[in-house]
Structure formats: structure tokens, C-alpha cells
Length: 376
Image 1 (cartoon, rainbow, N blue to C red):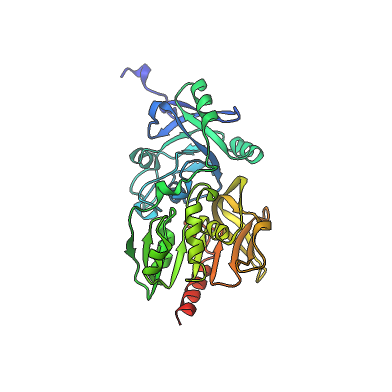
Image 2: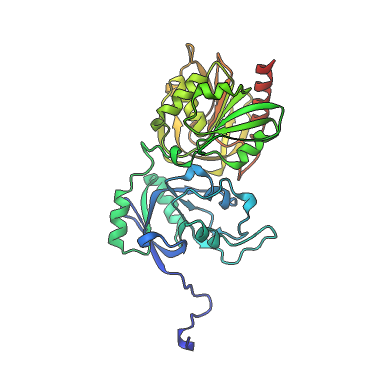
């Protein structure tokens, strides 16, 4: 290479790329991570406000079908490690960042985030004005997008055609293919994998032998395992598209104690007769304040969801009666419910908090106590 062909210090050699939103907004950047087929990747664009824990976010199956824009400007600075994976592979369609660190600095790191994205086939775009992007999504809401090195006209057409997650069953793509067992505690739990995170299962391991089952595992088969309780995991997509799973939960209620997190919480609500609604831009981050109504205490929580239970649809009387236990202080969204007549409860946020604060870890102790009481 001649001296004239050597890039000046600090210049990027990454290919130029564009991010185009379904409403026509365009953002310039550089292609990072894996090369998208045809220079084009699409998905429903959402933003996440975590300051750290980017690897846990990227490997969270709840992001299936979505492109994640990180609001924090520096991503990848401490690299990656297998210990932080929430699933064997990422399920998101891609990532958007302001600055992707090329040289990670951490004793735990086994590689860079860019190499991790390449290895798992996840495309990304860096150099984007994520502050402007986030402000736009807050005003316009989550929407379809396309990004890559393809020409702008191609990206515009692809962004316009992106269907997003509304009405989509994405759980069937991320759930486990067959039951498997883990854990070593004295209780027995059947955990429905709608896109379960590794950190959730770690919380269950100490209290029970856990049988992780596919999302469509029949209620009779689950009860045939003689569990002390059933756990309903997080997962991606539109809960209204999961009639089969909601029916399974309905069949379990009143027969065995049930605890649901995120999508599991939504399916619990649907099984009781409630409905869900899609939030404008969802809750994605590690700093959401939630009030616990029983005590008035405020918890700082980790959240990742685009849908929520409609408060007015939660039955307050009758055999399926439930009460709201937690609310989001930012926008009043229902963050927790508890059944009145049967042992079952759920929370919209993530008490396992990977990544995030541990204010809500007490919920796993409440689960343990509920299962122990039912066992007597």
C-alpha cells in the first residue's frame, strides 16, 4: 500500500451506511458487526437506556424481531465474555450505537463486541446521532427501520415494508425444542420457555429442580411432572398473538401456583380475561421507577417490553379477580398483578435484573414462600 493510500490516524475504514426509518427519517453512520445480506437489515427499532450490560441486552431473546439502539454513547468498552450471555445466541436483528469501542478494556473480556457481532451474524451501524434518534422515537414511537450499506432507495422501501412485532408470534422461534432439567433446590418448578433469560433460571436453580419446557407444552403434561409451581418466562412479540399459551396458563391456574415475568406476566393477565396494549416506544432500560403499592416503596427496575396489560381490563371481581400490585411511576403502566382467589402473581419488569438493579430480587423469595405454602 502506498503512503498516499494509508488512512490518516483516527480515520475510520468502516463502510458508510445509512439507517432509514419507516417514516422517512435518515441517519448516517458506518457499518459494523456482521455484513448484512445485500447490505440490508430490517426490524422494529427501539431504544435502550442501559449504561452497561449491552451483551445481556443483545442476547436477550425478548428482542427477537427488533433492532436495538443504545442511548449510551460508548458501547463495547469492556468487551464481551460468555459469562454474560443470556441465551446461546443473540436474537435481535441488529444494533445501533454512537461509538463502538474497538479496543475493550476489562480483565473479564474474551473479545471485542464487534467480533462478537460478526461471529453471531448480527449487523450493526455505528456513528449514528443516537441522541437525535432517541428524541425522534420518543415523539414518533417505535417503528420499522432498515439499515446497511445498500442505497437509500432500497433502504426506504425495506423500512416501509417492515411489519414490526404487532400481531407476531415470535415465541415459537426462540423457545426450547424439548424439555430439559437443571437446578438443585428442594422444590420442583416447571419453567415455560417463551424466551427465558439465563439469569432468570439461575435465580430458580437455588430453590428448585427446574424442568424447562417448550412454549406449547400442554398443561396436563406440565402437571404430570408434579411441580410445586410453574414459572412463566419473558419473551418476544405480541402477547395477543399467543392464544395457545394463554390457554395453557388458564388451565394451570387454581391447580398449581404460578409466577410470571414480563411476557409471562402478560399471559397471566390474558388468562384472567385482561387485554394488552402496545406502548408508544416501550420500556427498555435499567432505571425505571416502580411503586410497590402494598408498601409505597419505590423500586428502580430493569425493563424490556413493548406491550402492557390494560389496567381497565383486569377483572376486580369474580373467579378470575386480580389486583394491581405495582405501577410504573413514569407513565402509570401496570407493573404487577396478584390473583385474589388462587396462588398466582406476575410482574412486568425484570426482578432478576440482568443487567440492572437488584431492588426487586425479593420477588423470588416471595415465589419460594408461595410454593412452600402450597406444598404443605
